[in-house]
Image 1 (cartoon, one colour):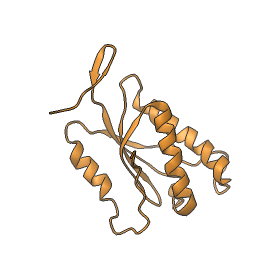
Image 2: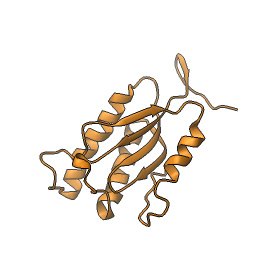
Image 3: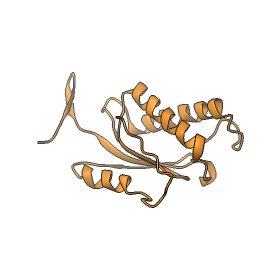
Length: 140
């Protein structure tokens, strides 16, 4: 049976597969930075009420499967996550390799998951299986 969420006047199930990259596609997500970015993205998504169903941090990009209430546009959610996380990354890590308070590239990739969620979640989970420094964005 399919699980639906409810708000006051709507039943919904909105899931998105999102990919975004650090500025200049730098391989910046490793070690301490990777752990901090994971924690920052988890706390920001919780603050906004967005559920991270799956997530994977690669050295040069981030994959996430998000569950977003229809009261937020996906562009707002991504702008919020990227903008606030960039500021927190610079403050927490003193990240000086980028100009200004920029950390993420301007663009992103997004697709709706629909009822084919398990295929997308498996794809995210199996990113770079041979990478020894895997870091998942588990909500547990």
